[in-house]
Image (cartoon, rainbow, N blue to C red; front, side):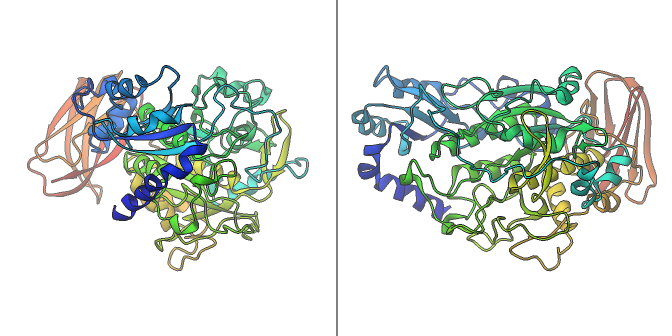
Length: 541
């Protein structure tokens, strides 16, 4: 924490110099006092799905989850009618403003509700896309036309096909993708079934002056195709039956520090929606259009970047966060990019189908010596869809992350008793060099099917059922089991050796079990309804 505060102090100290080129600022607020929101009424700022997940995994709802105080925002805006709010972060308690008159910044800094101010961009909010062609920020250029059946290579290397064959294809899981745009995705014929089946749950554009994620860039289209495609004999995604939400947090025509704020806002949105997995193929190193915001690899410590902090918090709040490691190997930077340096996430390096590390894949470790990247997947000659629906090969760590994202969603579907933190550790532990990690592969190439076999309850037909909530977990005396839309027919509790300890028959949406007689330890609870059966581990205190 001291190092984090030191970095912020350096930013603030340099304000009088670098603020002259800025018109956008990140304002850190002191508190959330007198908020109209309450942690006792989370329905006002979290979706039912998000609340249920917090209950299921015993993740507390705290003041960190409360939205930024609007009264503080109003105080800031009162300085000038031209001030606009571009982004907020409830986790960081920040508001990003467009303030064209820098003379107001000292006054804003002196407000009682303000802690400090950091310049983040010189931004044209009326023309966010600029007038020139987008640079290749993702290193994902298609290289040649698709040939029959080759997309199996990016799945089979993880034995993901075996996981699919067991019936785990992402059903019921919500994947939020943070990217730069989805040109063509909504009109390409082989993605229409996803819309028809209601599995595109929504979109959100975080870029000021833009409100259509299907315009501006096609990187998200290719990324999503790796996960979501279901084109027989051509391209099968790693989670072809999952649900999706598209969040544009990246302006591909610009490279400024403010984009990390948009990333943080996107991660918070994913959390509020109850996302199971976040995929981000975005990485930040230096900012060509706002060099005042540049950091160095020495700040790849998980705490110097607001995007990295947000990624860590998202992982701790119950989301499997998958971040591509970056394409900086051959650049002066060399190392992984941010937020791949975050704690409690999975950062992904790139290789080809023959397990040769890609010549562009950013390497580790993190600046504080942690193993990074975490794992490696196929991001060199990966099969993807372009914006016109053509199936081609492309390269970049942007494409290795989505392979892992889909596999992680399927694995969590098969192992719903694991928390996000536990699942990410299981993925690491099933890397092929887990016992001898290196700076290129991290813990290696994960075997998702073996991870399933090693952590299965022994009844591998269970599908994650988001309509069942079990709480508290850990529990001491009473365990509550609630069904959202159906009646529970029976509940059984087993010890980890498979011995039946408690059984009850019901015909109600909520069952309360007295578990006070159980010894402390881990148990398996099986919940049967007329539509599904679910297995979840819980801890008896």
